[in-house]
Each structure stands twice: as C-alpha cells, then as structure tokens.
Length: 201
Image (cartoon, rainbow, N blue to C red):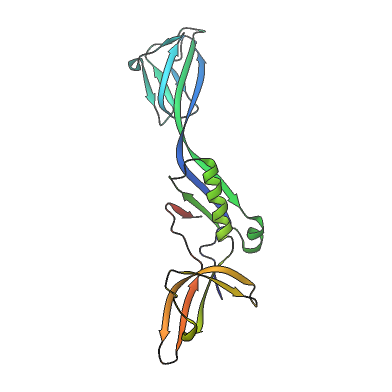
C-alpha cells in the first residue's frame, strides 16, 4: 500500500459566506470632533444627532477605514447614534490532536461561499478532517478476470485487508485488462474531493 500525505488535513479553517449583522454605536459631541470611527465596516448606516436622523448628504462614509465624517460639528454632550449593518464571514475551525501528534500538522484553509450558517461550516470542517486526517491509501490490486464482473472506473468498492488492518471504501481510478494472462489490475485509492478556494498552509 502507498500512503499519500499531500492531501492530508488534520487542521482546517473554513470560511463561509458573509452574514449581515445589525449593530448600534453611540458617541457624544464635544464641540470639536466631527470624524468618528466605527468598530466595523458599514454596508448601510443610519445616523441620528440629538435624536434627529441625518440626511445622507450630511455625512461621508469611508467603509475601508470605518470612519464617518459629519458635515456639522456636534455641540458638547449631544448624543450621536449610528445604526448600521455590517457583513462578516462565517468561520469554523477543526483539528485532530491524535493525527497532529502522529503525523505533524497539515493545515488547509477552505473558502466555500455556499456555507450559509456556522453549523453547516462546523459540519463541513468535522467531515473534512475525519476524511483526511490519515494519509490517503493507493494500491494496484491484481485479480483473475473470471472474478471481475461489472467493475468500472469511478466506482467505489470496499477493501478489506486484515494484514494491513484496512477496512475502507476506495475508488477505482483505472482498470487494466491483460488478455494474455487473464487477469485484471485495479488501480484504487482514496477519493479526493475537489474543493473551491482551498489553500495549503
């Protein structure tokens, strides 16, 4: 058996789709400040000064720096309330300590925009590490053609090897038929899923 470490992953970070959050931040005028910095980058914002909602042409929003610039300087002790919506990506992480101890750390960062909730991202991370925390198995198996009936490339078959302690479902990558010897060689291995936005770290 060949054991491939390149696709291993025992520590994964998953970044899902952006989720919108509503928040509110309050400030107090001091007769000199007219630039205010938010904690997050706003997608949409509503600003009230002394209880009066401000028209959009009364302020400038710099999303990159999270700064709000008011056209008029609020007087001292005037309350300023900013209600806004910001987007933040879903994040989940998973690691397998026993695999890390045995093989070292194999980290991947995966970006999947179709993950819309954190529970989905956690399930994804758990399943990925469960699958790839061990080296992937590959082998060529020789069989008598008389015992081969309907094997096809891409088919998943169960392989039991008591000597190596293997009991797993592997995929037939290639089938080689030798007519003269009357035998079939099956190239089999673990299935490697194609993922979008994957990074090896």
